[in-house]
Amino acid sequence: MFKKTLIAVSLAATSLASTSVLALEKVDLLIKNATVLTMDQEKTVFNNGLVAVKENKIFAVTDGSDVKDYLAAKVIDANGDIVLPGLINTHTHVSMTVFRSMADDVPDRLHRYIFPLEKKLVSRDMVRIGAQLGNVEMLKGGVTTYADMYYFEDEVAKTVDQIGMRAVLGETVIKFPVADAANADEGIQYALDFIKEYKDHPRITPAFAPHAPYTNTTETLQKITKLSLEHDVPVMIHLAESERENQVIAERSGGKTPVGYMADIGALTPNLVGAHVINVDDNDIALLKKHDVGIAHNMSANIKSAKGVSPALKMFDDGLRIGLGTDGPMSGNTISTIDEFNQVAKVHKLVNKDRAAMPPMKVIEMATIGAARALHMEDTIGSLETGKLADIIIIDTTAPNMVPVYNPYSALVYSAYATNVKHTIVAGKLLMEDRNMLTVDEDAIREEALKFADKVRKTVVESGEVVQ
Figure: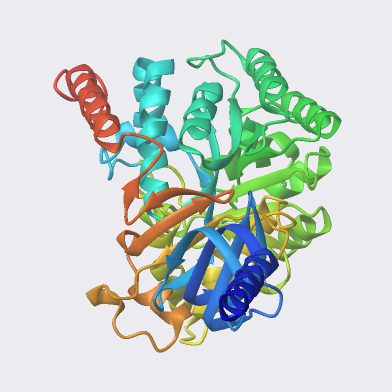
């Protein structure tokens, strides 16, 4: 009788344990004990929170009191580290990493140096090598999504697919001969072929990228606008960036601003993302808002080139779609958005002569959900909310520069380095763990970039063929 009772108790306990396990919510990834900055509409913060991920989406974001309700295939104990949405770089030219640090202080550098340099060296190999290097830099700096404009974007797409990032990739269209097209019409056809190939990719959004209003004709800009609406793809363009642009467009349009001209020709649409947007007045800003245009604010590149400070804070406060970008690695040099935080906050304080201007929370918003809005992707990325794609980063708060953390937003904006990013997750997949790349060989990528740098050095530096 005693043995039967023991057996019965044992079976009951086993049954309860099995029932308990079955009652747990099974997830693929659980991040616990985290300072979670959700960047949702209420800017909810959980000081000891958790994020649960199932497949490629966020399953739950809570205060952590339900941590025992989950059975996870992988658990990350954040131990107080900051967890936030993956950063979104709204404008870059990733493949130009291989040209970084060249002719940094040359006046009118785009026309005197960059265009001649690209004419000599841009190729499929250069684009692939530069993109691989830039992808690693961005991913290690917490960028999970980026918007790119360059040539041979199908090569960039292959590197994005391999590393596992998310990207909006724009094939450049410009009126003069370039590496992958003899003229604008060929550039448009290249873009159309690229769009057809990647239109249904889960992490890559193909796009048109007319270089700028002044480097394309009115007819080309109108054709691209029409095609973008037909194919429902973005258009990325440098807009209201330079005095040369202002002069050319004023002559072409009878004195209009670049934004006013784009509106008049029907090229301002919700599909458009304008990079820089420095030289704009109140009427321009109203037009951008009316047409629901996205804006990429590239502070470090703008001030390095002495082109001015965009009224980004005014546009943000007026409700325009604006996010942070870095521009290319020949412009701002670093392409991790976290490197923009400090400058964005401080320079806007300076130009507004207001210490309270551009507080840290606004900067982080512009790097996450604001950037998602700029790319019209706010329904799927940019915040940590149930049902959204699981693009997540974890910032190490034990690094000397991050100790102590009284306000996580302030710590991120004024204290953090890109190297403080500890883990990077895209679509629920861990791509970097403890700063180790998991999907690509970082050392091999670096070595190939260094070999290409030798070619650059011999071709244009030692030969002196391109002005320094």
